[in-house]
View 1 (cartoon, rainbow, N blue to C red):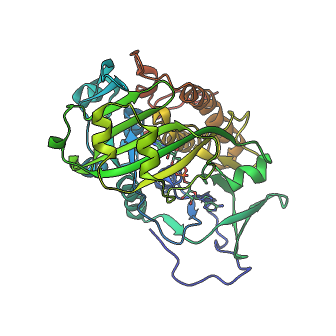
View 2 (view 1 turned 135 degrees about the vertical axis):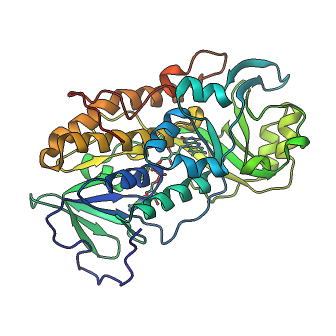
View 3 (view 1 turned 120 degrees about the vertical axis):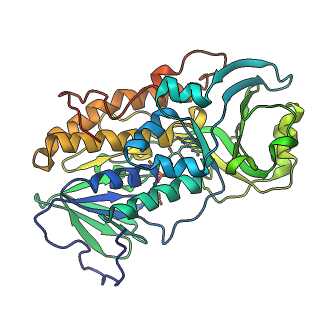
Length: 402
Ligand code: FAD
């Protein structure tokens, strides 16, 4: 990855003049990096602006379902991900107190056969690192750390002007806001829209625990309580268990990957849950607490030469574990739309992207909020079987080779 070494003076432009279209991706999360990797295949200049001065390894696991791994395989990232990921044999839904099995979904080889991609569970930091390395390997992605976008201006007509918190500016012919749930890009082009606090919090933690220390032989289990749940699965090559909860709590509004929670509060909130749950949360470890927000689906994602991707346009509660998956799918479809229509016809390309993705992401947002997915069975074919590489582009169908 080309990381600028010399500081750019306040008020100067970061990207210089060129004949090739300049694409600015704001945000180097899962979605922004996947897109940058793919854009590097096109005849354009790719600048990624990330507010963080450096990447931190967040203590959390992530499910990467077959619809996402299939998309990532086409981006050339899957082989590296498999190196550190766990591949669960199945998903078990259990009753919170008795442990009775409510539903079972075979994964492992079955997922690869049925959905053409593995179901992986891994450390979020390992997933992100695989993307960072793949972006670097393209040789065509300029990653600018320490660039917090504060403003966008497309009034000049021929280019979009980006302004960063420290006064630096840049210009681009296309801007993609991949800057997460509190997206500054969305706020700038779409105006303020209400973020909805769900009245619930997620505790999450990573516990050092070998497979042999758990009685129930599940590698991926969701325990369903009357008004709360906990999901637990192995990461770190089976040496660690990651858990994440959803618990009603209206007084807590903070949303951060680094804010600690109280283990005592967590254990109390899980009172009455099966002893297998307590075996995990009673282990000495740090727990983190995250207030859960979502947003109603937006009617449109783009304005002029600016569009949105991932949580910036469709944030969702994590109950179907699909937020990052949707961001990755977006990246593939946006890449295909740009390949199909070219930078010369941006309105058509951005229409095709949005037209292809809006209904899918709105459905996943809505179903996530209902929190019934895989509670008592059913087929996830519609979700896991989606292929971002071949789904027909709206309105014009196209196939873009990988
Ligand atoms: P992000 O990952 O949020 O990345 C946005 C990036 O933009 C960040 O790097 C940020 O620093 C940067 N940024 C923000 N503002 C600016 C700015 N103004 N200027 C420059 N840069 C900026 N999803 C799954 O698929 N599977 C799961 O198992 C799963 N589990 C989850 C568990 C929890 C507890 C939570 C809260 C979410 C979970 N998700 C899961 C959802 C997933 O984390 C998100 O949907 C995903 O990270 C969205 O990716 P993104 O690239 O759109 O945004």
